[in-house]
Amino acid sequence: MGVIEPSIPEPTLSIKTFAYIASIWGISEMSWLKWQNGRQNSGYDTLRVLQGKKFDFWLLRFRQGSSIKWHVDPVETGLRHFRLNTFVKPAEIGGEFQTTGSIIKNRIFCLFRPDIHRHSVTPIIKGTRYVLSFGFVLKEKR
Image (cartoon, rainbow, N blue to C red; front, side):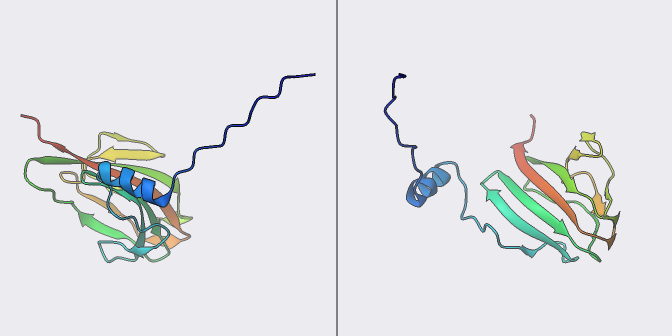
């Protein structure tokens, strides 16, 4: 007959504890499971996963007819903005990510500087495109 180990209850994380930990990490109030219009007002939607003082993490949804025109994302003086876009699901037709420069780019993800590299998304002709987008800022090198 085997030895029966005493069961140890799994630790639980209360909402209050999570909120405290989030505040220590500089994470602002989260709007989970709530799609909002994208900043470019071009038909795509955003769902905030996490956001802190120097980082953000979003799920982006591009439905048929949406796109993003060529632009750069300005940041405060003295900061460098980096963004890692992971292409979760492509549209059936259209929705190609374009950029004038990148650090690494392949068919699965693109790491680039949205503050200096112009970027866009071509119109979605058919289907829906999903992207996980993680951004962070660093101080300028001296």
